[in-house]
Image (cartoon, rainbow, N blue to C red):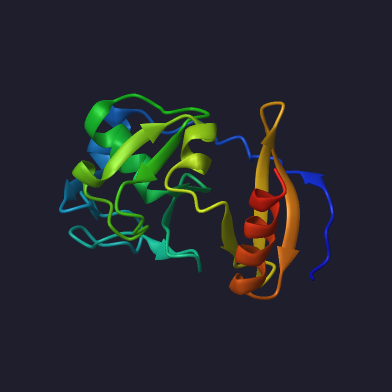
Amino acid sequence: MGDVWYNVSMKNKPKPLPTQQELHKLFHCVGGKLIRAQTHFTRSYGKVVGNDNGRGYSQVMIKGKNYFIHRLIWMWYYGTDPGDNEIDHIDKDPSNNNIWNLQELIYEDHVKKDSKGYSYNVRWGKWVIYKWVNGKNVLVAHYKTEEECILHLSDSNTHQ
């Protein structure tokens, strides 16, 4: 069995987004992509913006701050900053930023959505199991293989 340890996960507080008006001045939005609406220093008009952050999510820098493209697209269309809420990719593809593929969820619902009870943590290179305890997402265990996670969960379910 893998190591079992407990830890309350901490969610990073998102920074406030630029206003819808600012975003409309900076970008056009077409097919889930932000396209530069004006020339800015060496960055050219008409270019698709964003760089992959290594986890499949695109980010762009505005006034020295990095923002997730999907959150900017939400603001571009609806004019409301989701604040602490999550902007979820309905199809689970973080590169699909079409507005019809985005939905606003509270953090707890985002974590629970389609949950198998475990997931792969790319940063750690391990499969992890979380559980909701008193409104917090608590790490229950981590394993090297997905099979170990499934075994842990099936053992837990038979002993309840």
